[in-house]
Image (cartoon, rainbow, N blue to C red; front, side, top):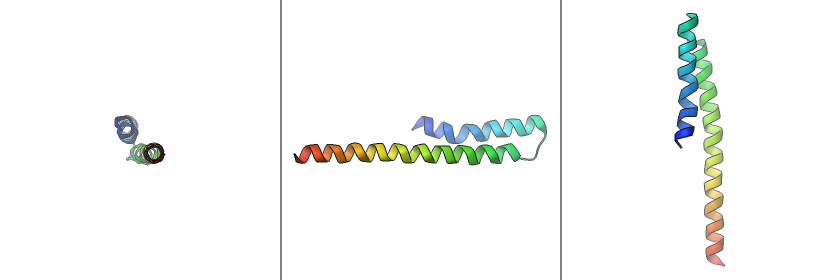
Amino acid sequence: MTSIALEMVLPGIVGLWIDRQLGSVMVFLILGVVFGMTAGMIHLVQFARRISEKERQAEKDANE
C-alpha cells in the first residue's frame, strides 16, 4: 500500500520541481498528478482484485 501511495504522490512532487526549475506554470505538476493518480488507481484495482481472488479461493477451500 505504501508503494501505491508513493506512486500517486511522487510524480506530482517531481512535476512541481520541474516547473520550478523551468519557471513554467504548473504544467508538469498537473501532468505528474494525472500520471500518478492514473498509475496508482490501476495498481490499486489490481491489488484489490488479488485480495478478492485470495478470499474467494480461501472460502472455496473452506467449503470443500
